[in-house]
Length: 161
Image: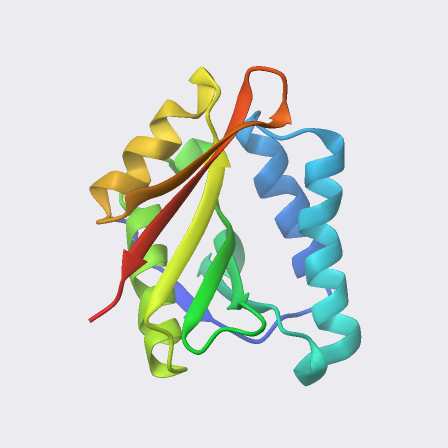
């Protein structure tokens, strides 16, 4: 496990760090990378009026992973995990699981009981699905051809204690 410092307060430099981390995965399209950055920019612009929350993992004052989540409107205690990403060269060292656990603690402290996360059904996302399952998430739904032909949306759920 990598020794990191966590912080929730977003900083202007985080948008570039998010872009670099998400790009490093090699999974996401330019449009998806832009969406990840837009969420950070919204949080920077709206601060407390934004429903997006962030957790950053830093080592030597450099962001090496992050999560973005928020409450699902019109639900009592359900949250969406929008993004979890770790710099590619640090994958497989426990940072993703540690980030997810810290995020779940923050969601629980905010009154969250149910965490939902979506991912693609494409073969390249099998490691992502394995990751969620190893962290106690179970498949709650499958939407065929949601993203594109032969690319469904898998929705995972974890009920927090």
